Image 1 (tube, rainbow, N blue to C red):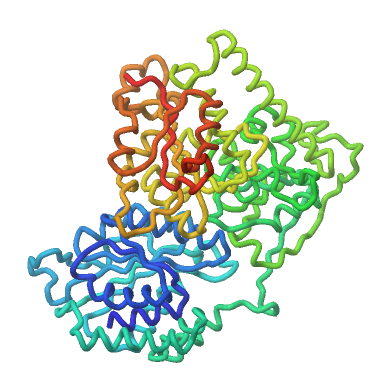
Image 2: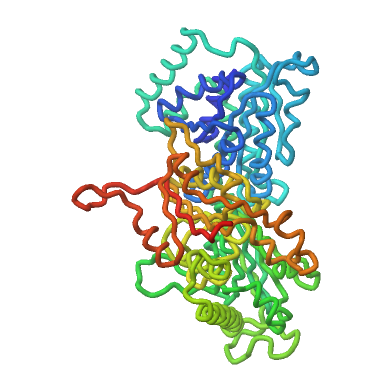
Length: 600
């Protein structure tokens, strides 16, 4: 049965499987391990199930971002191991990422008997999955084949799917009876079958197809039907009126170049969160000229401070999941505004535009009178100028404060936010892949006016769990370096993600820790009111007094500590190991740069 699962996973395009050690899931090791040795699938191993699941989550995002959409499987043994997948499953569900939980189980006859590591109905442990499968021990190959195909298909979803059908997690619970290991002859036959196929079919893609000859024809038909043709390419229609803006949030690694072109052609302000694909203000180009962008800096503050622009909005085109700021949430919830939601995978669709604007000449100012909608160059220019002015004012205020308090230094409580913001904006301006944690880390990007980085974030539920493992998976999925920008609380929350088994690929990850000794985001919320002062530190910010030098050493990561933006830039640039001649020999692939406030 495990071999049939492995065959069908390969045929349906699953490229990566993450294992957490366990005995009940052993049949999947012996089935998938030889396929990995033959280069037909990639396997990864992590010690605990929680980190394994978040690694799979990052892999799914990375594969999608590089144009290789694929469900990623995570394998666990039975019992409480399954429950440890839950945080990543929830993020996959609300972040629309294809994750396949392959949960090994005891045979059904052992349920409700008090048997070891046996849950009465393990297939019901994980909530918010797109579908559940519970495969009985000894199921015939055709049943297994069809079930695996259905599970992968549901997880990946289809191009332009409705909100209820978008990509997400699926639980595939499979009951394995003893014996859990193959006999020498069974293992040799399976290995020989794989070797024979790979030797006769040197192409990896052809070999993947050939190794599945024992699978039913139904699987091949299903996979073929899932490939969109030019004739069947779905359409998305968008209507542009006076006072139209684009609001964009994280899209799980999908691109949105069609919307970027729409914004440029029709002069639409883009209110894009940092991890939206529309946030980049400039990208590498063959021409030396800077690429025009209609992205609005500090757009949440523009909504709050410029009533004439906010009240002129009539239509909001929404892409991804914008959840970062309250002004944007209020705009989308405004019943007087028409909201048009675009699929995450908008670039896979044909975009049809209905232009109903009436104010298109540059002589008409935006919002000259209350309620007067606007379009054309003046509309987008008004938004960008408003945002740019707010950013300039905020920077001038911070600069004045630093002149009073002395040079900005992360070690001081007053200097830390300015230093952290400068470091964050420096990272955003680099041609890198940047994974940004929730809380203050992503909010420090609100004033960035030069965004060249490809920014990712876990915004499905915007939690702080599993971010080190997710960033590692992103690096492995993209097959490129990733910089993780993270706060100290989120870093401590996933400290186990620093541990990579000796034989495993750890990816190419640089972690930048903004350590202000606790959850400083709460100090900027309503919890910081003077009459609540006695509650803030103990129950919300929770100072811990810990640095990361010893933790980095314990987990085998290189480490540097910086106190200023200048020190940080030098540390970031010095990411190469040198030989005795001073020549760079290799990039450091596992390093932590800590930006630390003085700890108490």
